[in-house]
Amino acid sequence: MTEGEKDKAKAVTAAGVGAGVGGAGGASIGVLELAAQGAATALSAGVVIGVGAAVGAALGYGVYRLLKKPKS
Image 1 (cartoon, rainbow, N blue to C red):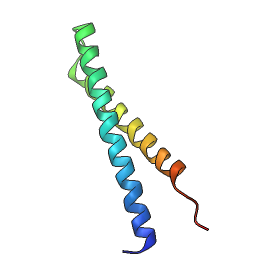
Image 2 (image 1 turned 60 degrees about the horizontal axis):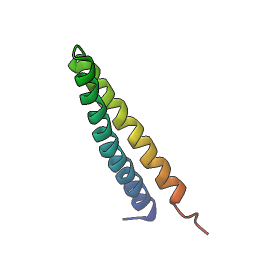
Image 3 (image 1 turned 180 degrees about the vertical axis):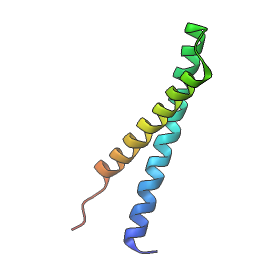
Image 4 (image 1 turned 90 degrees about the horizontal axis):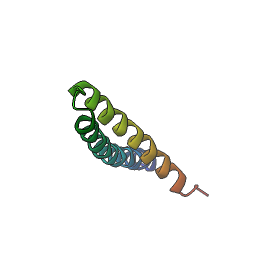
């Protein structure tokens, strides 16, 4: 595996972990929305979960790029 491939694998892993964490957070918020409104649909809860996963993936990738050491 080349260095470029290793870097891409690390970036994908960071984004995947972020998506998992964001999805879990979105699921918590989606469940709270359903409990609070009572009339919320599964679609609106699904949208909240999806947005949470997308934001988590973006943040995970951003943190990875921020913490990645520059090559000398």
